[in-house]
Image (cartoon, rainbow over all chains, first blue to last red; front, side):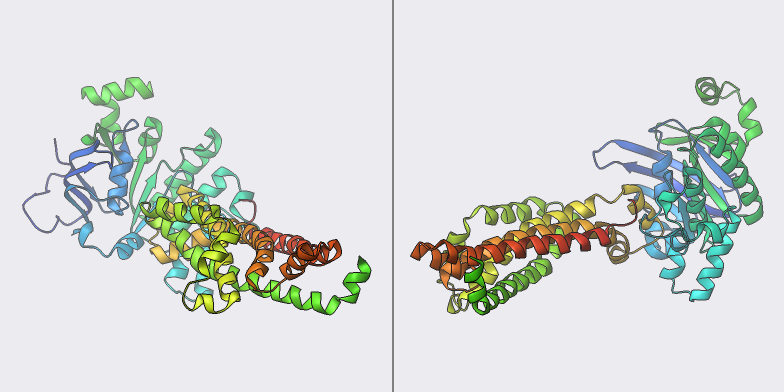
Length: 261
Length: 210
């Protein structure tokens, strides 16, 4: 398999400068024994938005969860900022890595403001700082703090909840953002709206983002690079332009099956 | 009837307080033991069957027999109230353990995953997310346990632990319905009252529109 960066050497202890996340021959087996990832290599550079594209069961979500160690690989190494995740303090690691999931996973018993401020409170920031930052984050995702701050998640639409999920993940300003099918459960209209918003935020915030989707249009729209996954490994990575014109059979097959573009 | 109760109101009042005391202490013990056991089950799935099974078995032992079993126990056997309190606490365990477990397991997996992904520690997850979301469930278990205990506590009079059962057993022995009712009515009212008031607490603990 081709490595995703030209300069990644597999013999050095530290990763080459610029690789914020790196997979080195990573394998993962599900608790039921099924092989989910096999010998996967991947390198993600600072500031890029890598979209992991693939069908269900190709190992996209598993790869994502290995980065913030919600899962742990059986073999190989996952490095975050040059340090193997197994050597990171788990809490420290997760504070460096924002996490957005499909159904947002907002705390139903907390108001929107309180949801956004969860990590800030855990970090014992001052009350005024938390309020300021929370309001700032809500405005960032186009939600008026005065209007939404005191509401509960059930009082919001799916699209609004997902915005809150993004605001929450960004609140403590993590340099890395993981997004697992973040717009997957939304109606086409909200989805489109949130994708546009994502692009604005992406350009403004300059985070390193790993986004998982099976939607080829979404991948082409949002990714600065697309990593195509199939049966537990990365079979190649392309810029959206390369992807569209690639004559790699796997890419063609994916486009024909899902895209039609 | 009313006459009888009014005539003996002081005695009945004392017995009612005794009854409340027996039930109250035993529920406190059951809460202190049952909630941690319920939490333990969510963390160590292997212990689930053992804990739930034991609590189930205890519940199937007839209360009179359980009171009797504990009579020869050292320290406990020295005073009837101790036996009564331990027995009632044992009986109250099952609903509290089960509801704690069910409540925590009922938390949306996405919420738990998001919490872990944000770097909440196990303790933070428990106290800031799982327990608040399970609180109304746990309270429902406490409520069930309380109502059951108020009933079972009347039987504690058989081993001389006092409470409203005194009137019932005396009435049975003397074939005196008024005496039986003098114990049974306040006990029933007590059960209804605690059911209602704990129901309010439960409603108050229910998170908004979950």
